[in-house]
Image (tube, rainbow, N blue to C red; front, top):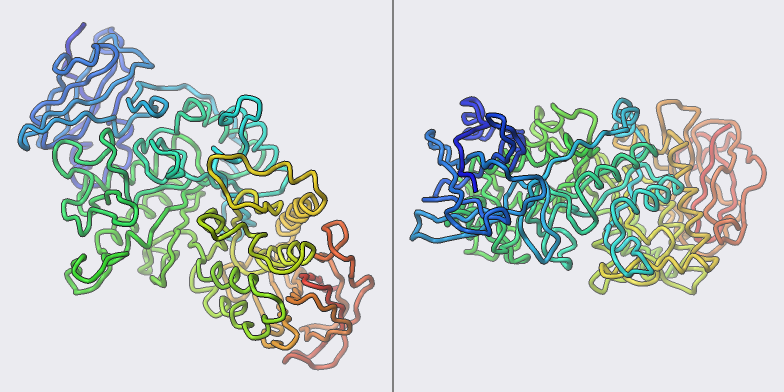
Length: 635
């Protein structure tokens, strides 16, 4: 077998950027690359292992023999080992065998920058390249308007392994198969975006993908990298954006992964108080190390650049921001100012968002951040972290708790359902009903609703109607759109058989109609992050459990009035204050018969009178259907 030849893709400028933590395209240099040197085809390998004494590439092309192909260490103290191995081909399996200067420790590691991995339980990296020809030019040209903060943004959260399984063969559906079934489904359902739970390579199915070992490779469970590109391409051609869950907060201790990579704490922080996550039994990145910051920011850019992702939902941001997250006294060390904030993380997140928005200005980064940390979704130039949006966890907790109560008790808890508006415009909030709310004994969303079957479905329609008329973008976990009874099980397909039954079929139709209403009603999204887009009519009718408000867009004549009746009692001649004279016309009613409701509606135009009410100059009397949201437009 031919020996390693000296060769490099790195320039001196690359190395300086890498050392200073400012190289944001490391995937173009690191890892394995098919190249031709002196007329001979082969593969260039490059790996960062500064504590190594020797680094060998072992693989199926050299019978996994250590020492057969030793890489050369660079002379510039970068810690990068590299070299060209002639005649190695695409599809070759390989790892790095590293002998450390630290007590001669030996590790055998997958390539951190590999584009493809073996199917689990095997863990080798695979030399890969593809020449996929994208066909989403129209989407990429116009996606800025689809991903803008004043655009409708309704997200369907999906776990690819359990959305739908291949029934006859009892296996995962492939990226190709999903490009037919999933794309058609989300398009028909009028969702604007799909969010995929992590698809980066991971070894352990019960982690749902949140324990990543292959940050630059879509998981081989569902097919090849170009097949995942095909799925993204098909979504874009159908006018649907794609958001990827991204996990820069921690990584698993698996022997082939990033942990103790070269016999030293290379990617993880060496101090366990900052480098080990007790809840998840995983390792935490060392955000103080420049090369690690370059690795992570390059990875975020990779999915935008190579896979045309429209956004990243950044997982577990709260666990990153606070040094005392899930730690007792004595298990953490304050920062240099005596505070609990992780200053390295704050600067890293700002740098990440600055780079992503500078290079990909038509995408969004979304923080899953559950605390009151300020200005998460504000620009870095005013002192914010620079995210485009933040999950509104407080809204989610308060809303699910409220809707879980029997309507007879709701009048005592009106503040639970109205409190979110006290802080709704402090961030660019996304309202999430995510996978975390339908596991671990919490029940499905439908299963949380009180009452008999009719009331449970009515409550669910009301909940979703309230969510879509509340300021902020929307996210729903798969199965919740048709009222799945059971909790989510990552090992099984969703209960699609439920759609044979009318209540579930009606619920599916309802969510589809709600998405369409949202997309076609600018007042529900144009000012979704601004207090100018919302005005209370009444939030204090505790006795009747009714809340009412106005949603506003850029054009006043498109404003809508929303009334939520949070009990099963029909209320006739219910008086609401309005801001202008004219008429109210009902444009949406969650109690409609087509959605499984009782069909109580406001059939005619309702005349607005010069009769002050609710602090407004005018008022109108309407009928409130049971457990329903009713939406009116002005005429």
